[in-house]
Image (cartoon, rainbow, N blue to C red; front, side, top):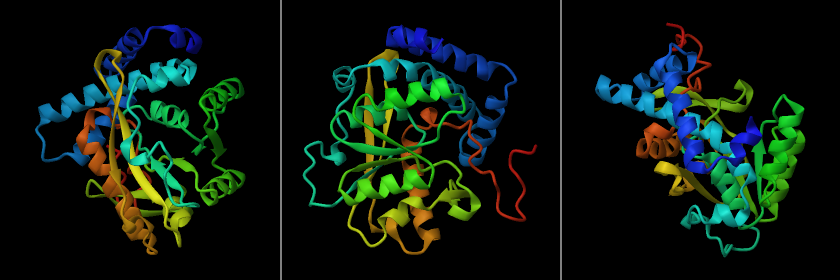
Length: 285
């Protein structure tokens, strides 16, 4: 099925993904329930109709993210480059002081698969990833994501060693900032005014250095016409020695990007679980 999706023209591929997402919204699915809870928590000031529309459209966009992945994994570097301009803040010419790394932080917003593959086609980038439990699919994903020049580092001690080595060489590092880490490696910080367990790996890697950090996402354009980047450059607050303040800055930047395109955010993830001690679980309703 994945191989079939890889050969469908992208407009048809996206139409199929959108239809799958529409069905997930129409039927009483777990995905739709979680998305409704998240959007209600994050946008209480918006009307019920607005929130309903965002949930429906976000599920359709998640369907596209699912079906487009095999297509993107098969696309050549040249094809990917033709589908979107390089993010301006990432400086494709690589004109940074020697030894200064560039962290590209991409939340689960828009097409994070496109962003990783597209940026890697311009120069070396090492990205953390979580291996698939299905070996055949994991091997295909690893080979595909490395096809444009990217290096994958598993979320293990060895993977962290590779990230630090790439950082010390002054290369690009790709990170996803909006998944809940283990309690021992994260801090609770506000995300849309609600406490969310947030990764602290990024500020730890930045500590004592002068690296650049860009938060960006690739917006998926209608009818398979390509992708458009939205970017924010992080300031020194991202490396604050207080992990809670650094985590709060991470969430502030992610939230600023999500507000630009809320219908393309992954609202089906339980971002507010686990909850702080003594706080009710928002997903138990």
